[in-house]
Length: 144
Image 1: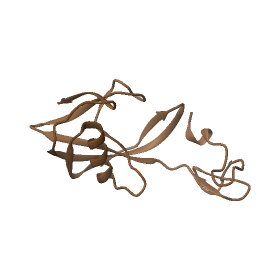
Image 2: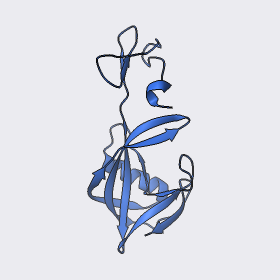
Image 3: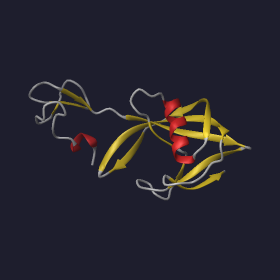
């Protein structure tokens, strides 16, 4: 289900949301509280080592069993670079340093029946400390 169809009530007053004709991808309620449908930033760490890059096999849904780069959502007040460092530490137990930003894209993150729009920010990184390990979020690891 598209996010525009998923949310019905104003998060400020609880009033019914209606599509705002002034701005695409927005709503307002009877009290004129605005509610914008904006994409969520995420980060993906492209970790280089010995001529390869680290990929992880997802340990849970959505996309359980698929391979990708470690990462996650950017928290409020956090840059994509800090989010990547935090996520990699949480998921793999290693410290990384960010080299540079590779590119951004747009994607859909399906969660509990709602398709959330995301902007993944791909960051080139290097391991600075620790030995990578799999865990709850990453069933397997491989350098390719």
